[in-house]
Length: 400
Ligand SMILES: *Cc1c(COP(=O)(O)O)cnc(C)c1O
Image (cartoon, rainbow, N blue to C red; front, side, top):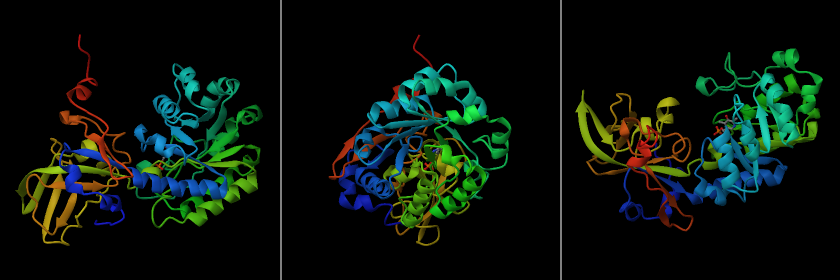
């Protein structure tokens, strides 16, 4: 659990001093870690000539877009609002969008923001492709290479049986016409989740087997996200070899659109102990941060997040279950051990909390949205938001 590299960014500040005035729970976004991730990504761009986009669904804290913009090629969006955010907050950079199904009543507005539009089905390509082309957009179709390289997280596997994501080769052969293929500038696949480049190698082989005849007609190939590029054990040379192989063999440009890798280990969730209760010999610390509200992937994925000065249960003398303040019985963050006893008011700092948190949290139980702080590359510490009762209420109705 204790993982030096996850909390490396905190070594340049005095944590007690920074936390003295903060209201917990809060997220802290670490600029130095964002920059070091972005440097790795931009080195891949430089060495291969590929393009790398920020997948905003993982991290869309736009105050940090100016910091990331010089390193990246643009943003990737899951729909209208993210496309608009990318266009407005990272101006002058590419805006790509993929959506499982676009809406007729939004498509015109979407064309204002996005320059690359990726469709998920032949039907959608037929319905919207011509309009997109007429407006000068680069048009792509998502394929499904039917190649699962992950078994433990089926809800994150777009190649799982019966998946709605991407066109399989049998449907392509049944429904694609020459004029539809002629409309395409690119092919998109997204099948990975937190994986190394060996999984990409297997996937690319499946893409080549199934769609190798189509790729020479394309201008670009978008290999999606899920590449754990900024993780310490990631095999970068293999990634670059695969990018080069694709670009040379099919004479196209490769795009990657990682979310997680851009902001990996670049954020913390700071919380405090509100109470300690006991049940069946287990000590349970109730925190002001909730798994269900503030780190939903802990329950959805599920996983146990890294904790500063926390160890796996049983390693140190004092073991606790850490849990949230909501009424949900399963609002449990995980079991940890410490070399000290926990007491009310203690700070607990969770790591790797920039991704799939601030863009995915909620106010279930009337829980406040945690404020977001910037930990500057220079060690400066500043609050970016001022969430309150109004942010809870506005989602539930209107004042009549
Ligand atoms: C989720 C997603 C991404 C980003 O995935 P990460 O695992 O955060 O890298 C990129 N592209 C598409 C189409 C996605 O659905």
